[in-house]
Length: 186
Image (cartoon, rainbow, N blue to C red; front, top):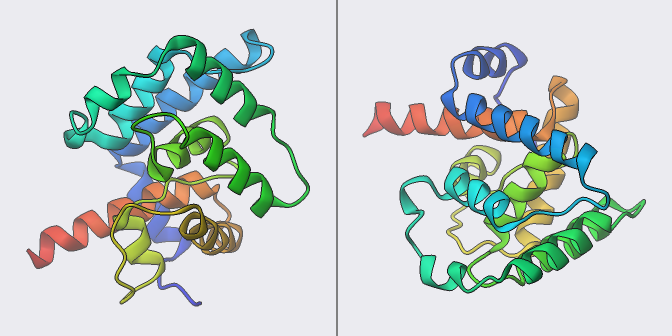
């Protein structure tokens, strides 16, 4: 699929993006944690930081289910997900996202945010805004499935490679472009 998104449009959007600034702060934090935690894992506070970032104004949604996550389970599941490595990126994505989404109140969207904020060179965050930009005219509403995420990441990686950005940077740019287009048309 040919995208109308250009390298200069991405650069312009990323330069002024508050979302990018928030993501960069979390990526830096998780990069430091990765160097100090061997094996790497999330604790409940790390998971909560991603939830606040990803869910924004919808953070309270399913908070009762998410509070059921015990520290030992969060650590075990995230550690297992981060240990999965494969030469097949689709397989790796499927297993990792499936593991992360096994935690109560964590769907594929939040799982994708965990992966994107810890490995931005390989993953992006699936959401309605970025989906609309990658697949114009395709109607898709959450909840997203792992199959949706594989399809999304195939297109996102191709666009990121073509434009010379990471998948995570492209996902932020697509989110921002959709938000600005929605504001202009609404």
